Each structure stands twice: as structure tokens, then as C-alpha cells.
Length: 423
Image (tube, rainbow, N blue to C red; front, side, top):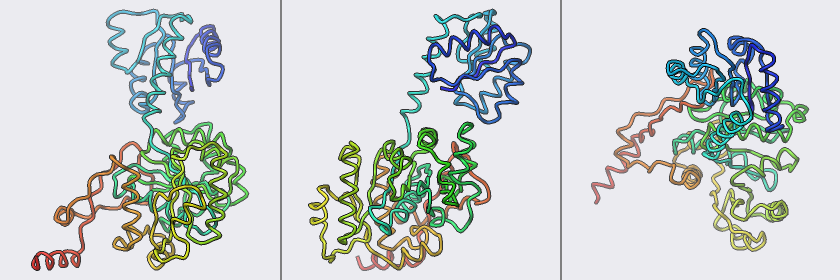
């Protein structure tokens, strides 16, 4: 937990720091000698989980109210010798969680810090899900599925979605979604991990829609070394708290960064095709997952470019890999190739194609109860098309825009009308 202590008294500052570090040496404790204004100017956007303000003076309670409104996740406590009803009411209005006696001792400080920790833990457990897509062999289509399923979760299921490209050396997930260069990449974020918060994460991502953004892989393979396994812990814990789904394109190399991401994922989706090289590499990868101790329910196999008349049947693949196939995505090369070449999600470019319908159903299966029920054809007809989010600036993470379901085009309506007349 990140804790900041603000006090005009050097003696109080050092004593509070000693108590906090004795309670939990792993907590990050920052000391600010002086006023709350000095803390505000030095902290910037990297706010702590807990702010301890010793003996507030003047308008500092009013300033606390502004800080709390700008950073709702931060908990504020005040240490004071004053405990009048008027002061307590002012502190409550300022958003102060607790007022502790000053000078504070371990008997009152420790339980208060524990209560904050429990509050943070409860908030963290109400997290979004992390979905990791892994290629069993190069060219399996894991990036295509990851990007398009993430897009479907956002646009069709009404979820807040972040896609993080963890293919550190040759990742190109952003090109599958938009024809623009990301302003920042994962390596840029890694260098700023010490000040990472929701605002910095949002500003580093490339917006695709109002509720879907992408954190691109490093644009230079040399910068892949900037990303460490510990960075993945911080990044995913933060993203979980602000998105309903965090989709990872892990790539194929099982390096320490990739394995850490797979460890933290709720579900892993190995992607393969029904040809012998893919089946062989898929079997090897699944054996690695078993050796890492992943439970069978965590690993859900997806067969991409599935052909019903393929020489290797799904039953053969399941027997060879000793695992069931969770879903299969049909082969429709024309729609997939056009989507990749134009940098437009297939659900937007060719919504009636078999592959788009399959991905839409797959996304709804992932979202489960969170996905809204599909609207009837008349309801969709009467709705206006949703406006795309402007690509120029990142959208606020905590305020997703509600998107209307796109209206049915005229040919689809004519087909429906003809069917009704025949009936």
C-alpha cells in the first residue's frame, strides 16, 4: 500500500513513519514536511492509497475535499488534538474517513490502517477479468481473435475493455484496430511505473471506441527489455480496477513477462488450427500449462479457421491434446484479410460474415450475465447508429459512454419484410 504522511512537525513525521514501517515493511511510505499544498504540488497525479494529514490548519480541510473529489480512490485520515463537534463535521464534509488523536500511537494507528487495507482489498476483489490469448504456433490468428473479441466485448456487450499487447518484440495488435500510430507504448509505461495511476494509464492508451482502448507493444524490439515481470503485476492490478475486461495478446514466447501475465490471467485461450503442425505445438503448449499448475478450467482452447471437412477432426484434436475444444471460429479468409489489411475490426467491416457472427457469439459467451440481451430486429431498426469516439484523445476510463446498437441497413429490412409477407 502507498501511504503519504504530511506534517509540519519533523518529530511527528518521523514517529509516524517509524510506526508505519514497523507495522508493514512492504508498504511504500512517503514523507512530506510542510503543508498540504506542498504535498499537492509534489504528488502530481501519483496519489497514494492513504493520506495521513497531521494537524490541519487554515483551509486545508477544504483543500482535502478537492483532492478527494479528484482522486476518489485515495483514503484520507486526519491526526488532530481537536475533536469538537464542529471540527468533526467539517472533517466529514471534507471526505475524511477517520480523525485520530495526535500524537498518534500504534493502538489507534494500526487498526485504522488495517481498515483501509481491507477496504482496498474488497475493492480489488470486485475486479474485471483478465483474458490471455496465446498462439500455439505462429500465424494461428491469436492477435486477430484478441483484438476482435475485445472490440465485440466493448461494442456488443457494453463492457469497458482494455487490450494490452504483450508480444514485446513484434506486437502489432493496434494495427488490427486503427490506422494510427499510438502516442505511447508498453515500454514507455514501464519507465513510468513508479507513478502509474488510472489517469496515466488512460493517457498512454490508444482509444478505439469510447469504452475500448489499446496499450501497444514497444515499437522497437530493443525496448522489450524495459518491461519487467513486476511491471505486469502493477499494470494488471490497476487495469482490473478500472475495466470490466483486460485482454492480453501474449504472443508465443513464454518469457518471464509472458508467464507472469498468464499466472495473473483468469482465463487463458490457446489458439490453434486443425493442421498437424498446430496440433503438435498445441499439445506441447498445453503440457507446459499443466506443468505450471494451471487448472483445466483456466485453459479454454479455441480452434481458429475451422473447416467442417478438414482432414483432422475436432475429436482427433481433443484426443491428441487431451483437452476439450471450447469454441471454434469458422474460416472466412476474405473477411478476415480485408479486416487486417484495412485496420478495421471485422465486426465493423463485415458484420454479416460468418466469422463476425461467431466472434460476436463468443464475446457474449465470455461476458455471460454482463452482456445485454440482443435487441429484436424492430428495436435495432428504430435505434440511431452510435457515434464513434474521436481518436484524438484518450477517453476517461471511469465514465464509459453508452453506445446505441447500430441500425439495420435497408437490405436486411427488405428481407425481413418479404419473409413476413410470405408467412
